[in-house]
Amino acid sequence: MAKILIVDDEPRIRELISTHMEHAGYTCAQAGDGSAALAALSAGDIDLVILDVMMPFMDGMTCLKEMRTRKINTPVIMLTARGEEYDKLAGLENGADDYVVKPFSPRELVARVKAVLSRTLQRSEPADSRFEFGGLCIDKASHNVTVDGAEVVLTPKEFDLLCFLAANRGLALSRERILQKVWNYDYYGEDRTVDTHVKMLRSHLGRYRDAIITVWGVGYKFDPDAVK
Image (tube, rainbow, N blue to C red):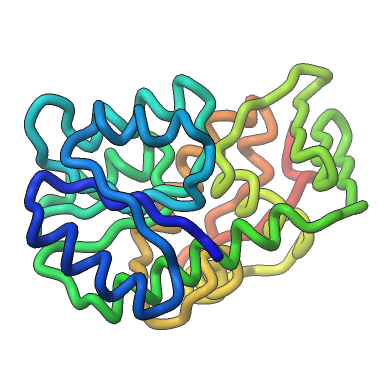
């Protein structure tokens, strides 16, 4: 049974989320700010974090950055204020797995949690696939990526995206299909989510950034032959 850490400075919000998560079969822990969340994460038994952006003492974005700095790769769903696109993009760029806008539907939040945990479970299953494209090597078993012999550090979501693109080499993939296969949902999500992660992924791949080609009006295609 997955354990979820709910981080929000409003007790009523924490209780609302906890009620719905427990009804869905999860166990829950709570924290009122980022510092308390980091302390709870140190125990190592948290499977997912629901993290509010706006909090006193230590806000959600600072907490997320500190998590990733400490190599805590626990999946994170950010709670952002309506219309605050900066918070959404900053969260994704700093390693968040997804975001939900306040005020939110508890049913939507449960669906997002199920999708993120499903992807995490898939990543933990044994895998023996390995992709090699010249100097770009992707090892799914070890979750390791190297470019010209140098290790590349990717977030779990960036790794999933790269593997999906590589597995579909040469195919024009729509943003909708990428959302479905990498984020594991059809309805929830936005095209900007895909675009932001592609931008981040390209920034890590050196000369192999050119292997991810924008197909205008469609989405993206992985073509390592385009790398010079």
